[in-house]
Amino acid sequence: MTTIMILLAVLGGAMLSVQAAINGQLGSQVGVFKSAFLTFSVGALITALLIFYFEPKHSLTLLDVPKWQLLGAFCGVPYIVVMVLAVQRIGTAVATVAVI
Figure 1 (tube, rainbow, N blue to C red):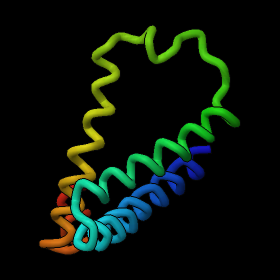
Figure 2 (cartoon, helix red, strand yellow; figure 1 turned 60 degrees about the vertical axis):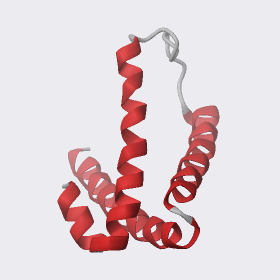
Figure 3 (cartoon, helix red, strand yellow; figure 1 turned 45 degrees about the horizontal axis):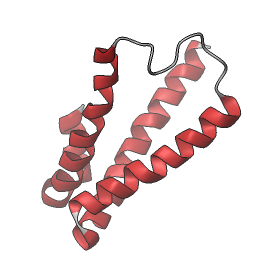
């Protein structure tokens, strides 16, 4: 199981680089914030489908957890916006390495 999780983590890291490159190109053509909006909109739709079909039932809902735990959602927006800007200026590889 550990090997599978490591492979999934590596795949996730590779996907971050691919996402950064794609969003950087998209951001230069349509704008940084429109690119970020598209990323979050499509991501929200896909995540909603995953929740609907695969998420097991939990005793708590998002409204029941401590409110500070919901702040993690705010971390994604600056990350995507900064990466779209950074990839345009310093390239995908440098921006990804800088994040790591």
